[in-house]
Length: 129
Figure (cartoon, rainbow, N blue to C red):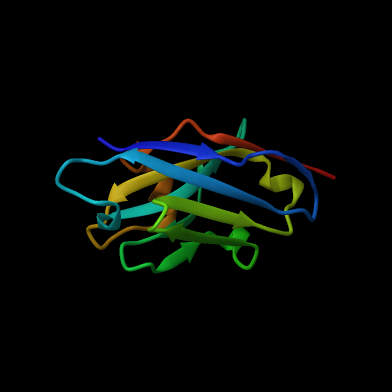
């Protein structure tokens, strides 16, 4: 069982920046942090859940088209933390952001992040005009 906890959400003005963090607190006994694809998805009322970004066990990254060039996903192995750096934020980025994880079997895709096995409780990002 993987437990994830997000933090860093806030209210910002358009054009601003935020950094979200995700700390896994527990992993399945047989696997380590490096065995998983880690990612972020978001959800706002009335909209479908949307995969935002992922980083796989080889540290390859992938992004949704809407956030390419503005968001950066990374993970710090020393501190066991996943990050999402967001810049040039727009009102349409307003959503609850969730961290997610799935064992890396070589087929992790951004479109699927919202369906992964494990996710946290979310952190709210609100971008005003």
